[in-house]
Amino acid sequence: MLNKNQPLIFELTKEGRIGYSLPELDVPEIDLSSLLPEGYKRTEPAELPEVSELDIMRHYTALSNRNHGIDSGFYPLGSCTMKYNPKINESVARYPGFANIHPLQDESTVQGALEMMYDLQEHLAEITGMDEMTLQPAAGAHGEWTALMMIRAFHESNGDFHRTKVLVPDSAHGTNPASATVAGYETVTVKSDERGLVDIEDLKRVIGDDTAALMLTNPNTLGLFEEDILEMAAIVHGVGGKLYYDGANLNAVMSKARPGDMGFDAVHLNLHKTFTGPHGGGGPGSGPVGVHKDLIPFLPSPVLVKKDDVYTFDYNRPQTMGRVKPFYGNFGIYLRAYTYIRSMGPDGLKAVTENAVLNANYMMRKLEPYFDLPYKQHCKHEFVLSGRRQKKLGVRTLDMAKRLLDFGYHPPTIYFPLNVEEGMMIEPTETESKETLDSFIDAMIQIAKEVEDNPEIVQNAPHTTVIKRLDETRAARTPVLRYIKQ
Ligand SMILES: *Cc1c(COP(=O)(O)O)cnc(C)c1O
Image 1 (cartoon, protein in one colour):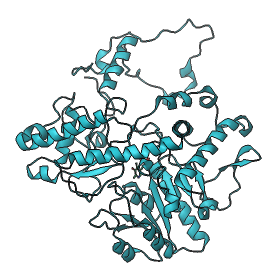
Image 2 (cartoon, protein in one colour):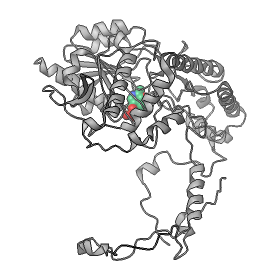
Image 3 (tube, protein in one colour):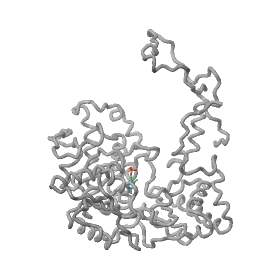
Image 4 (cartoon, helix red, strand yellow):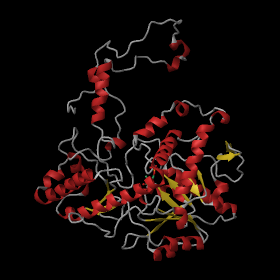
């Protein structure tokens, strides 16, 4: 139940009240403070809330009800694939045989865990059409950077030190230019044409023998398939560059088309998007990278290999780009992805892609009469609307996003990609029912009508949430670090 006047936990405090009981001490008592050096001891007791067990349970339950997550409602966040997290994944991730192993255990005692990781690598290599995978990177952006460092190591191993540029389309996810910069490259933007696809003429203009790689998302961030991909691959390979695939959202093409077959040399996946790892709140994520055989020597070390039916880590990799994650990486996320892939099977994964694309096109066509649709062709797993028409009536996309909260929906991604004015990027995902899609469509249509008849209701939204209109950036820029007692 939402309580608008939910007190702070500090306001519930009653001196001396505690929420736990411990059995009587039956070992010698140790004064822990005697172990601490003087300078580190508190001079005053910590200001902690003093509440009963029920108080604290109810407090956190009430707070959790204010949160919007994939288990509480529709979450069409384009380019982020907030799809459902199957509960079977959670049971498997908690199997004691997996959950209780220690990263320093001898390899001979964790063969089952290594087998699962090895199999997962094989499945992901098959899905992407790549020759080998590493599971090490902790997230999508980390995978991008890891792959670029492998590409750099590849060029340098050929004595090729003059490739200083990475090409990135203007519609790319922001992590692409960021990863290129962190990998020490200069980013060069490639323009999109009126179809929303890479402008081949512009690509030819900016590419050269100083190009290390072209980073592409296909379908791109507008949800559109780059039809000229084979020609682009030939152009990039023609100057000795490598082609990098941002595969964060593979539910647009999985089991239908493979980056390896399109000519890509390296690809990262987001197990916390396409492969149903829980996502949000900062992780943990997992961003495995697959490579074409040219890049295998440069994979992060150690590489998990199978020798005579024994799984082992190979550290003897003289050309490795280095190590990017300690121990096994984010092992719990591998288990969830593995459970998902095994429980779906190849036909299931194909159905995922078909439904993701069907749902996005259904929603796009239903909304097309009410909003501007800058790119008219069929989309893949997501589409981008423009709020241009509404802006002329004094209502911005931000206002409409806030108004969606009143209908109980998480808003889509807004003002992205940057080349769409007042953009709204919607990804319904494959796991939502037609009824859910229809009610979201109805809410969007109602908002479009309100903009014409009663714009104030949209401009001042939200009206039904516990906290009204929040400043977009203040929480991140001026966090409340400590409760100040009055
Ligand atoms: C989410 C996403 C990324 C970045 O992934 P993180 O795990 O958040 O680092 C990169 N590219 C695209 C297209 C994405 O959607």
